[in-house]
Image 1 (tube, rainbow, N blue to C red):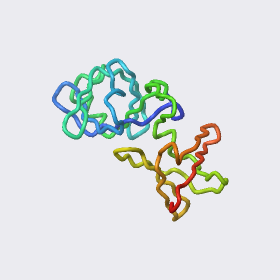
Image 2: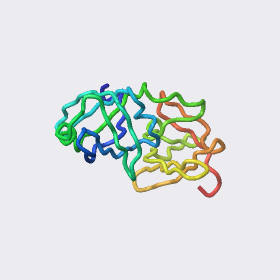
Image 3: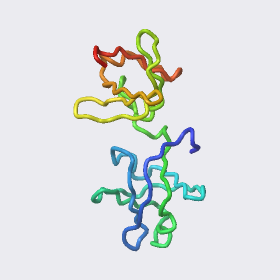
Image 4: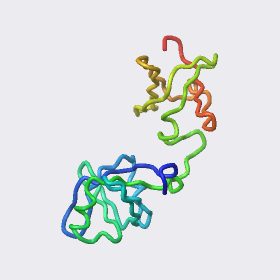
Length: 169
């Protein structure tokens, strides 16, 4: 799992108990990335990497308690505090047509239907009804609703999003 094929999903922030359970701050929306027997790449702060299979994962307050096969003591777990956890992008669930992972959208160049450059998608704000793309060009920022009537097309090969901005935007 190299940098091109992997996705940062969490950071180890502490330990729980004496049997090697990790406290993990997850960047993922769902526990599904921590399903039993899935492989997790651990990269410590010095760049050392090792791969472990997930034993189990459970939500706990604002974090996730994670047990990895092969990590069975508190001393092993303590040595991993500060490490980042990655999964292979190939292991992500397949999405329905017309839906995308955020990491696919962030970084796209955004153009109007008149081929005017607006900026680059820097982040995404989730709302109750639809996501909002934060598009920046230097100091200029525009918020674009992620709805079909505004986002006309996405070309991942060219890394371009084409939009039809509503009046006033």
